Length: 406
Image (cartoon, rainbow, N blue to C red; front, side):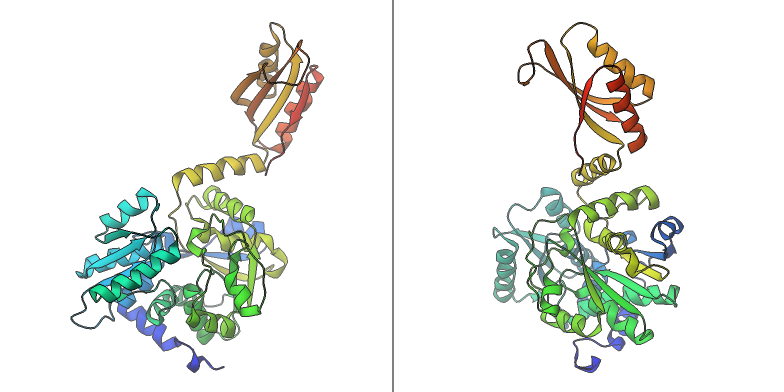
């Protein structure tokens, strides 16, 4: 199969770059010295989180909007995420009516944000598939143009401008690690990157919860829980156009576990001081999961979006601290008599740890009536410091059980 038989060509990406120039941010591509040291690579990050809607999706949405025929009544899409916001924002800016169909039960903040960007929001369907069908039906009924989130050639070409900018900034990149959901981003990037440098390696990444593109391209049946922190790439069926490009131009598709994505979100925040969503962190997750595949290479990664739920982020941070040993949950058994609680906290203070939560358990314990259980959540500098605390408590005569962390 030649690239001429595919849905888009490198010239399409170059045209898209000219079309959207000035209307979307030309985000920076920067070397991360710390991540380079950690991963034994030369690691460059493309900060698409700095777009107005905090995601690269603006590029493809705008390129599609600019191709509308004169007299078009408006556009419609089914989306509860970044595609909705990108399309709504640029449609409003261009004076084009936009309708976004979202499943019932979509979080209020996503509905509100999309409406604030100028779109009409229609809530219908229990699932995303039902919402998508409703969007097609409404498009036919009202004469609207349906804008697919990833399988539209204009959308694919617009997303490819991410890769074009990366290679303009860092021409000698060896490898690009790109998230894959439906395949729009990786298709666009692979098309232009292979044109500029036929030897560049394109590595796609999917979560083990939604491995649809790898299954499709490689003829596998991997299953998947369909529960992921990377909502932006939670796609069950890759596009017909995108799967052909991926099959032809993507060198390898890697699968990473959910806990690795979660850890990458926290690492990006702590090291680069930026917030990324699950899909935006999955390239780093792959780099950490498969270090041997990238060692010594000049690697480019796209931070695709930063729209993560605040509560989810807070939980990820706390779980990350637990993984690193900075948070520990200790169950301490002691004599049920005055002064024992004070003695425990005295030991904690002497070691230099900090008590965050304390629960004294008498009624539901399985210990003797003369004993009691206390559950502590403590903060320490690191795992070694937490282990030092456990040792100190045991030396003080307490029985200590430390809960396992994720």
